[in-house]
Length: 253
Image (cartoon, rainbow, N blue to C red; front, side):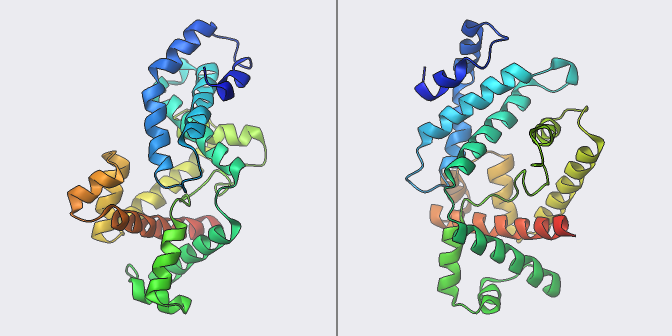
């Protein structure tokens, strides 16, 4: 067993260790897949193995807390916990420099402001002009902003206590017993995301569909769309920032 996982293993005692390890082995390919999809957008100094180890901890957490009476499939619940644990690990590493986060947030706000004024998706040159930079500088900012999440638990206001954070995770996993206010908030956010995706430019909308719904990799999407992987990454970042800007505005309002 991985040393990182082993040091946490003693915390999870309700299930027989042999059975627990059997489930971990069974779900190892899912953990690797999720970690791989997240790692592809991260800088090279972030080790994929560290994300996998965090994912295993998330799976163990799911095994410990899963309640079949809530009518949520274990796999769905486990995937939410795995992703949550990996993102928690990334937050603890603070891998995105503060200046990059600030620029990405500013860029997302610019997209939201411009597109509200224009009544359509903003073009690269329009965003660059609004920022007072060249198109090349704008593209460099895009490259640096890749990997910044659309939304986090913090954005949704779920960090006042561990209980609130868990409630959001339970809600995202499909639990019907989450706090009613949390259920309403998640429902509203889902509606904003769905509407915002519909309003994306055609290429960005297609990419979002292929990446998040068809589960294709960036390389596979490039082959489908007939463009380079780096171009796919750029389009993905623009889509992410457009969505982040609209969500940010919604949450602030």
